[in-house]
Length: 208
Image (cartoon, rainbow, N blue to C red; front, side, top):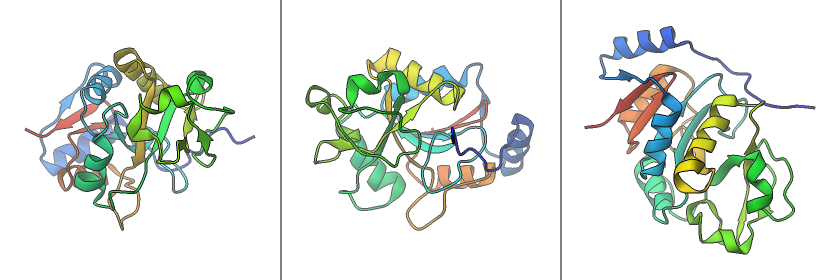
């Protein structure tokens, strides 16, 4: 049984530091990148998340992702308009910890690849509005600790801050371009869009 699709290139912190230094961009090394990123997401920032090996396929699954807090109703329009540069009606998919799927989804089952749709339980729809489609469904990624430990930890930390271990998760790219692959791709996309923060390996880039 296929457990994950993180079969693409991966980059060490040394690789990433070399790329950042080569770009001559300001950055800092985070003592705890997961908690730092969870703070940013909880505060309503839109985060570029570049961690581990790249996903194989068209879905962002926590390797090359743009992440945001679904609790904020306007976050979907902000991501569409200022980051993805695409039509405002286009929905986003959520990622959530696998252990919370029964709390949020009707007929819940493991869904690690964002290819199966589920109705969201009626009492949850208004709580994560930017992750729910107009018909009340989502096409989620359920994340286990085994499949992606760092992403699972991030979702758990977001849950501690917001009450919902759920994020909006869309592919790290803009309309018409492929998903980013390398640290250089990430930096270029970060500075050419409305992303607030880039969490890349154990490093953080922000805009001042």
